[in-house]
Amino acid sequence: MTDIDKIENALRHPPKVKVPAGLRDRLNGEITLARANAADFWSGIRRWFPGFATAALFLTCLVALGVQQHALSTLRAEQKQLEAAAGERQRIDQTSRASQEQAQVLAAQLAQLRKDNAELQQLRAEIAQLREQTQQLPALRGERERLAAQTKAMDATSTAAENDPFAMQQEKARRIQCVSNMKQIGLGLRMWANDHGDVMPPDFLTAQNELNSPKILVCPSDSARTNRLGVWTGFTSANATYEFLVPNISEREPPQTIMTRCPIHGTVGLLDGSVHQNLGNLRIATVNGRLMLQ
Image (cartoon, rainbow, N blue to C red; front, side, top):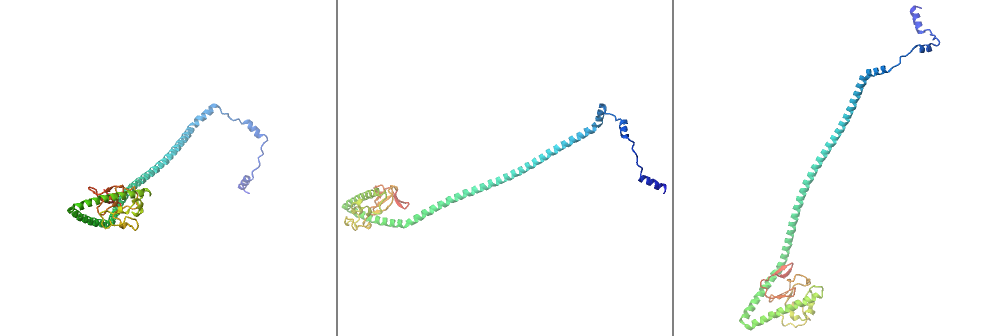
């Protein structure tokens, strides 16, 4: 075994050291530690103060940066909210303007439709009036022909009466009697209406009790009917000279409505009971399908 091997063997297997008894207590008694005093404390503080101040400043800067970052974040969030609100307001304004423009267009269209509807209603009324007038044309033609024949007959009678004074007086008396008959007829028809809800009878025969005698229904100048007997038996509307123009109408209709008419003398009896022989400035007009004196 070489020296190197002996050394390695000694290092691997060192000898056990025996600690003397009481060594620890003796060492504790011999070693005395220096006590810190106040001067040393403040000296340490001064030595570490720059580091503490730098650390405190660094922390303060960190806190300030944190506060600023939080404030910036809050401001950015508010800015985004304001931008969103401004965009929403702009969109609402655009929608409102579009709605107002659309409402104005609709109002203009509605006004035009109302105007067109009014014109349409007016045209319909004019068409209805024209149709009514067209329907009255046959009756007006017949009335014109009848009046022409009546005028011709009256002219012939007047010519004959002018040559005969006695005939003139007789014709005058017949006219007076004709007016009297029509007044009696008007009175009788109105009496009948008062007893039947202010509604006129459908014909002369229905009101025979108020008319008393059928003779008043015949004009004295009607030579074709003057020889009829004055009884109601067998009497018909064709036997009457006078025309009854307002059957079954209310007595509350306009008083200038023509109720009866003498086709020979042109005398008319109105709904109010008056009788007009010489019309003068008055004229007969058709209103709502009825003849009226205007």
